[in-house]
Image 1: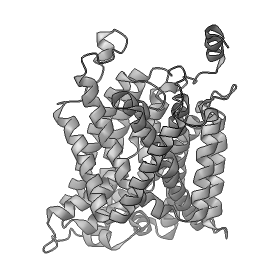
Image 2: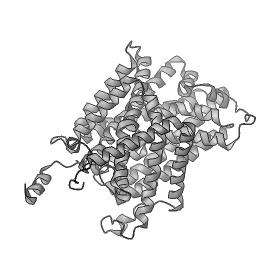
Image 3: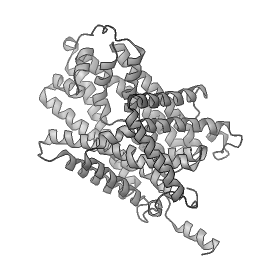
Image 4: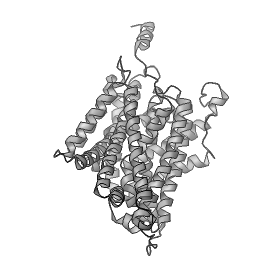
Length: 456
């Protein structure tokens, strides 16, 4: 086949369908952050810090870190509005092997393991609400398969389902806030507890930041679908910033309500703070309603992951470092169907194995490490004398910039790596397994490397 024939074949391939707008971006950002964590993690934080003010302070600081990260990714979206998002940033700033290792861990453990764990939580709450005598693993596989099939019909179908589920989960959070703020009444609120003796160490606050930052994680996945946005340089930055700000406000409101209704000691004593708040507000029916809300929230989180992450595997295949079939789009839906099915199938396997908790621990530190590397990529792009231009339009190039860069960007990188180091110190064995997965990925990359396809 001569050069002209190659060009004709490339031109005949379906391209990613640019069908997403600013509203879709906001829903995807919020859907990637809000899962089951906000319904559970406030109690974990309350056990680690001695006062209500520090509980709220931890969530506020986590929100600041997430907002800085959103600014970092928003600027990167202007510089690199390409399919794969974070994968493309790492590839262009460092080396293709760095991007490959990110995608490698994303597929094998981080994304699919997280989806499996979230699907199990869905099965648990769905069974509680409906009373079905069905194993939670079966329900987990059912929801994973259903959402996987929906996303195979195209980015518009997947985004519509994701938006509907996002709006429903916002309704569940609003009900939780309203139940605590209105139905209980000030006279029934729990008194503010006195500070715990000897509980004010910085180590406790630093430990509390780990579940907080994990609860705020997920906004970066919106960058994966930048190649399918109508105007990614405009809509993705807006989606990142608006979405993160709204999530921070919701998280602070939920934490405040939990403290107001349960008190510090009551919040620390329960493992299901959302259910306990709604039980006090509306009795057992309230607890069942919020259980349904949590099930919907986890389904929405799953929908977002199934929509976004396969675009990374698609970009890897286009770069010649993954199965060629994964780099093809369906001629009708313009969706990376093979990539979507691959991720959904592997997530189902992990869910059925019941080993997802251990698998997630393998790469927690590595996942946050890649966040830091992505922040460092912005430092590299800014420092390069031949930094890529957006479209020659100064207004477009300056649409979004990280405030107080490079101080804030460096701070984001250091915080991410500090969380990674904290996780490694706490779990040396699991972190070692994660390093082993990366090492295997490096060997696979050396064998798999093929010539690049046309850039996307």
